[in-house]
Amino acid sequence: MPNTIIASPAGYTVSNAVAFADSNGRAQLVQASAPLPVSVGNFPNRLVTTSSLDVAATTTPLTGSASASATVGPFSPQLSLPIWLTVWGSWVGSVQVLRSHDGGTTRLPLTLAGTTWALYTGNCNEQLLNATDAAAVYYLQITLNSGSVNYRLSQ
Image 1 (cartoon, one colour):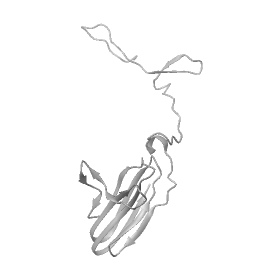
Image 2 (tube, rainbow, N blue to C red):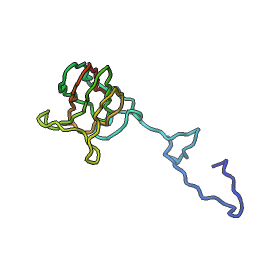
Image 3 (spheres, rainbow, N blue to C red):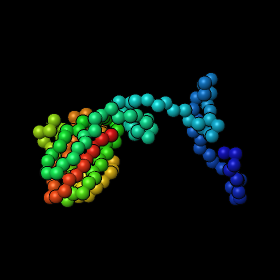
Image 4 (cartoon, helix red, strand yellow):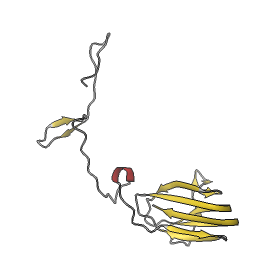
């Protein structure tokens, strides 16, 4: 902390520092000239974000368009990556994201504190969640009153 100013009445300062072992096994303080060393890789047994790993998804997006009510899917996500929903077009109705953990036999809407969410009545482009359950697959329940809607569920 070379830029720390010590002012009265203390005359001293208490500091905390993060250090790591350098190549000789000696403590090296983390600073601009010696940043904390990190490794980038795929950690399948840990929840991580793409911002820390920049891992490209290998999943096939669920894409299409509908001019009548339908349920489409499944979308099988790659673990530890965010799932995105994009809906666009000129349409009136709703698009709801459903989740199944039993291969599609049971399809339930996403909820947050018991309240349904991921139910859209207009165009959207947003991240839904991070995939963390290997058994989970996702569907879109499209209910159209008029028009045609385009959709893309992807990572």
